Length: 259
Ligand SMILES: Nc1nc2c(ncn2[C@@H]2O[C@H](COP(=O)(O)OP(=O)(O)O)[C@@H](O)[C@H]2O)c(=O)[nH]1
Ligand SMILES: [Mg+2]
Image (cartoon, helix red, strand yellow):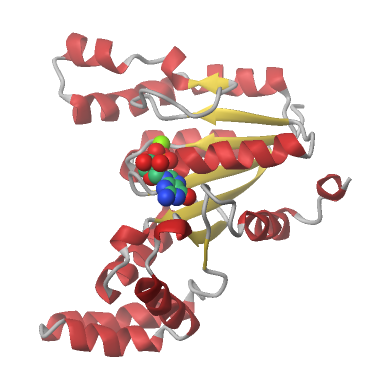
């Protein structure tokens, strides 16, 4: 029986900061001298700010796929996820060989490849199977400038949690570049999601948007989506400890974090 490990799936829209956060978390675990490994599932990434222990680019080559199947970059990314799913046993064997205590999984830039295609869901379920998984969904602040945008990305996070059936922590990334006025809005919406309804009302004159806003806030409240929502920064390390503490809440107390 393979050893159980603790997995962190990093999720979020393209450019939300998954790869940079992978590096930041890796540093955190390394500093604590914990036994951590990183799996890169993004076949399309050119350069990584960390050295992955397992890398799907060793399994699939996007440029070759584009040539061989006569595909553009998007088609090749879709084909790559399907190909990775057929090689999931190899990935699983590599994890079992490394036997990490903690595994950080950096997922493809485009969330739909991972969360909405059955191949992506298969890959996540196999990796999660012998581990205690948790996921971090990153909200890119540039998508959350307006109340409609913020609500939509929160709905996306619910939809992704629904698809992957993983415990989820939601964080707003790139705190260091969020302007004061936006931060005030975000804090207000997080503290009291009802203010989203009033702000959608002011920002959109379309009555459908207003009605939808009411229903969305209802869903956000029902699933307590904004309950633990907080901003983080991989660049400055802001709230990374809070993020770790929430992972620990999903996993149960990890005494090795305090040694
Ligand atoms: N200012 C700032 N930029 C960040 C932070 N995290 C990521 N970025 C930038 O956001 C862009 C996308 O980051 P990346 O990790 O590649 O996103 P991914 O597609 O989700 O993996 C890059 O230009 C990063 O340098 C952060 O904490 N602060
Ligand atoms: Mg990335």
